[in-house]
Length: 606
Image (cartoon, rainbow, N blue to C red; front, side, top):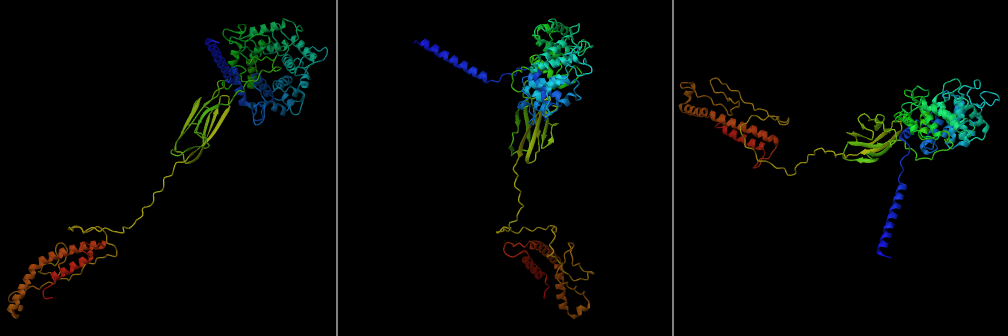
């Protein structure tokens, strides 16, 4: 085998392996949701309206929702349609159908029974039709009770909610009864054939059908009648009947592509949904050129009646019965006419995720902060590609059970909230992300602030120095008296000085206010005085001594002043108890100085 052959084989193997890998990858890759957004938004609305008992407020509304959800590829017995262990079918079984058929929200009992039967078939519980609700009843038997089977009666074969007036809403009621019997697959051909034969006779000259005898044609009942009559056996009815009804619908179509309840009125959701189903039942496509008005199709007109929350208006400005209206719209938009549905259910699709989904949330649960008291809460989210979308105005943020929504910055795809000055300890935050339908996604996380506490500053403690350092005595300068107040134990008492007659003699005190120590010497007697007679020598000696002492008075005063200043400074140092350089305390030195000063001023001869 040549080299080229080997290379060709190797290349073939590589291509085969690559193809197989691609096929496996494609197999595991999630397929996109085939449902249009007008359908998924309606499912979003259904989920938001489901109660904890599994139902949707009433038996009639719940039966309708089951049909619309199943027609959209959902399964109402799944966990996605279960609330607190309850689902929509369980709700129907837990309540009385007889009470519901005669309740305030139902104006046509046999039509209620017909739709209840269809909802049981859609929920894949057809066998429970005969033991339905609480107390148990046979829904089909109840429906049969409203059919006229009297021979010779002009309304024989018809269904009517009134036994006294068999023509009351007979066309409307009979068409729904036929659809219910077909869905259940009943074997009683006579009842079915009689109903169809009577219904065919109610077509008016314009090709349309009224709700009851005597009324003009309307698009809703004409479209439902087309679906019921298409089920008739071939050749049993006039072949011109269906084309004439088709022409009535086509002539009534509005510029937006939709259909009114009565010609000349606004687009009606029930009439448009029924017309789409009738077009499908006749083997045509609603988006074909035959059913387009300009660029508008019936599906476009129906979708234009959808609100932001996913619900459908019955017509502009009329929100009557949003659950039945939405359900009927979903069945039509999923191309499910009542000729084949719910007898044949569509394949189940991946359940629609109706709650907003979190993409990221921070801080994560259990986060611990040790160096800050500020925390940033952030989240990103989505409501899926085909949900009603997150409604920022409905979202909420709670921190430690306090509503912090107002300071938070909340958008369609994310939010953030800056928290400041948080106290130490455990904190909890809760996010409630809400879509326009009202579905809520709740997320709760906890985090801890645990910044370290600084150690306390100890009080200053005085520790005596075991080796005190003594400073040398400061140079003493004549300064004012110290401002410090002596302690009570150090009380200085000024010395008492003798009073001296100052007549004609110098004062013993100087201008500084300090006394002169010593004993005054008597003035010498003038010549010729009595003292002179006692002796001339002694008088002279006394006079000399007195003159000398008198001359020394200024010197003594100066010495006394300096001694007192030194004493005052010494007393100040003595109060501190310091040991002076050279030995001795200030007080001891003061006493020595005072002793010397006394010797200096001590009178002679003493």
